[in-house]
Image (tube, rainbow, N blue to C red):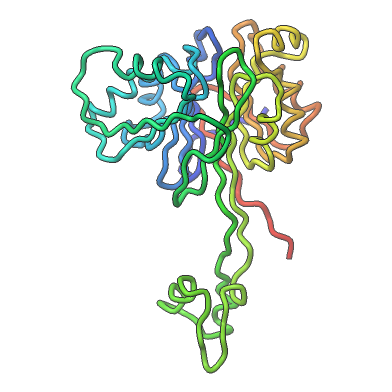
Length: 315
């Protein structure tokens, strides 16, 4: 079963916790930080998230967005500590907070759970429907409704497709230095009497996709989020043998998560949110590997999982 060791990566998932409702001696409640260039998206910080951030080398100032899927405790009881730490450390940038709009009252209670001096610029942006919730240099962050006992949304980060400049092609047209930037800004340049377009000196650069799917039964939203994801983080609370429990409580099995990944063209699959009833994590890997042919990571607390390199573009 593959293990991922800490290393420097501009785009990586830092796993803070992997337990479901009940933490164990080796698994903290949920928590995941996605480093995506200049963004730090903190998903579902459960109880103990602030300490896990310390152990993982994640500073409060790394967080630019707080994304909650729903308001069950293992996905949100870490919010008070994280919010207060933003102020204690005087984080200078705004932190945007996305959560199901029906849970406004719960978020207010978590945000103001006890007395503290609030200085952080925390901007609440509740999610009311499927669709985009934020756009920026990072791409587009969108939400999709899931099927759980309370209102729940999954998240998907999509970088738009682009183009990368090819040094050899630039040299053929005599384009170098500041002219490269000018060509990118304008889209075309006149060079020695001929028009050179960006497409003439570049190659397609596929955008990357990240998906985060927590507590849910199988539904259309799961597949929409996972579609062509380079990195899919998905709950697999139960094994196939307990699929009836999964259906009753609004969760997925490792087999279901793997089938979604296979059908949606996922490249790297991260299984997490494990029930305390299982003491052998290799069982999740074995079950998923029967259905999914890509890379599988059975998440452990404090590991880092890099976003795969960009998909190869056919010549």
